[in-house]
Length: 197
Image: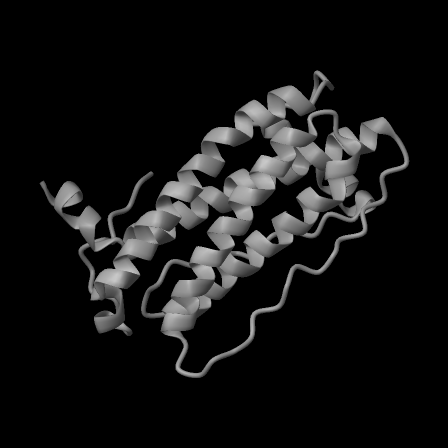
């Protein structure tokens, strides 16, 4: 169920969104998000060896209690810029979600088998957070210091918990990435020509 909102004017910060520098950052952010989304299935395949943990499974919803036991916080809900959600709010939610996932990846990194893939994904998430933060600084009327990721202390007594934590982090990061793409589409004025034809 897709909804087009690209042609709707943004309720605020219209001139900022039109700015070529802002549009360049939006495009870079979309490319980085797509790169992250493309790398998640490969990383999942190389790091998760428990047969029952599948990336796109309806069974993932049943792992909520396990996520709570391990200590995995849920990602912030990202709202698309609209009359009810400001550009600044949307960018802040994206930034907070990326920082959370950076911290989660950092927590599981020492315990997974394929550290190179985790390190690469962490670098991409960091780079995307930097781009989102640039847009956020442009959107803010007053400069607010963005916090560094707070370390996340996960309870990982055994290999199964490490597998579940890695799996849930990737599932959540995938959903976050899809939300970010959806929000960036609204901000991407170069995309209007593609969607209107």
